[in-house]
Image 1 (cartoon, rainbow, N blue to C red):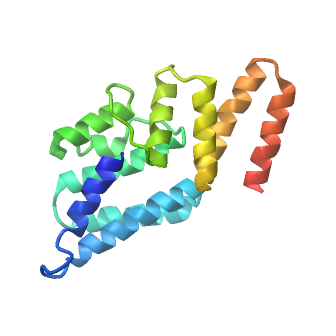
Image 2 (image 1 turned 90 degrees about the vertical axis):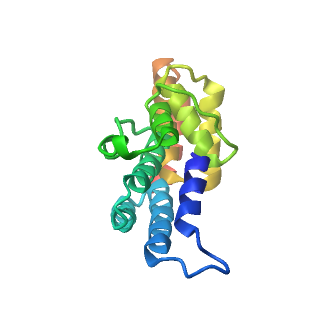
Length: 190
């Protein structure tokens, strides 16, 4: 995930420094995509949607499907980190214009491939979510995902991961733990 974001950021911000001024679409798209990610993770749905529409529109101005596909992957990754799994329809519509790296990452998000997670908090959450999707996650990894989301103040994924932990506690017949977790969720939601 971090490599996709860094690559996209590098493409978008290429030209800074002593070269000609960066085109406005690059700056606008980069800022909007960063705002989308921040708003989505903190749970500001309406703002995140506006940010993403703005980023996608700026990228679409170039006519480059590969850039729009990368933005769609960012969108999919933050959704996966928040345990919102789908087939990444925005990327799928652009799959033919995407490069091999983007296609491999999309497959990874779908649980069909491998990817080396970085130490970046979002990358760690995505990796945990992919493990969950593939059925290979343990309680320590769930707790790690909760700690990661909590440390970043990311409300949306924190609530999703806590919800998963509540379900597991209930399935194990541990009503006391489930009640404690629900209180924590209420604090976050309040």
